[in-house]
Length: 433
Image 1: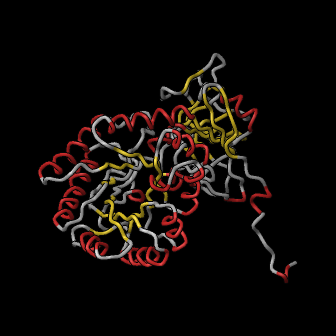
Image 2: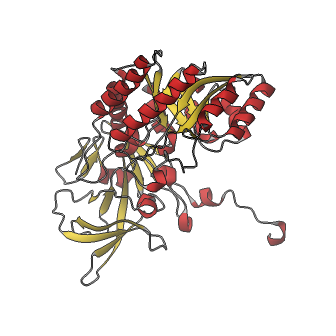
Image 3: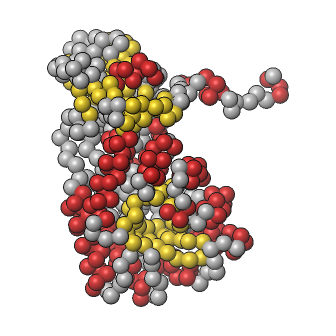
């Protein structure tokens, strides 16, 4: 199952970024997120190369996948833009060196404070509903700033993914409906507004998609709307097809063929442009998981083991759904090994539990692992996306530390939370003091 950026040393220990993971835990403790800088750069360059060799493209990293400042800084140095969906994500991206003009602000609810910040920094705002358009127009006129807007449309594309992360269906909470004419009406209204500049169109059909076909269908449907907008006298600067390119989590899953994906999507866009006599638009993509997902792992210590006659053996780790909620929330699969026993045979049927008082607190069930004992080190793979960003403090567990590794070196990029971190915002009312 090991991907090319991992290795196993003579001790039988997992190596990530040229660093022995067992030694990492001895230095930084557990549980511990580990991010491989070179893998992030490799993923970004691969994605950019596939599309960039065919036409003008911009990659806006989706911070919701992992908003750690060091991770965002790595992508900023590669030239990435940013897809943000909150004020703090916007501020993190700015702090990492990504200029506002290379950002898109997504989401079905942006507060007036968030919109003011976006206007101040020239961020493109992806409008999600008519009321938001009215608010943006009012704020732009009040502040005297030009609002760069695009509109999130719902192209009604069914993607083969979990229902919770399928966002391109008509019943989704996101975007303007195309079929009813709602999307075109949104553009018509914006065209007549002062201080509002229409610059693009946006769609996002879902996450963790491994088949190119839904993206091709999306491109076809989005470009048809672009053609209709041109007939209304609205010319766009860019076409944003969102994110959603997945990664293989299971051993039997295959990686997306990026070259095939780029060839089919770009040829679809160019065909419509050519047939309708349109100019070449900048293509924007918002990859998140693809860039950072397999660059991250979670290391957790085996604290206790439990035998059940006729049933899989239980092992309890010092990290669970507080550090990685995807298995509990989506039934998602993450591959698990023992980082200190990589050369041993996986011959013991094992359930991998977390430390929380929830029956749903598990990271994997019925997995074949070497026989684990107290003190062993479990590694959960592909945690770089939606690990830290969806972590929580269930039962007042502190969130893990994070280190970044690069060519045999390791540096702390997020401190482990402490009791003080968990309680510093708490206050007692006067009558309880």
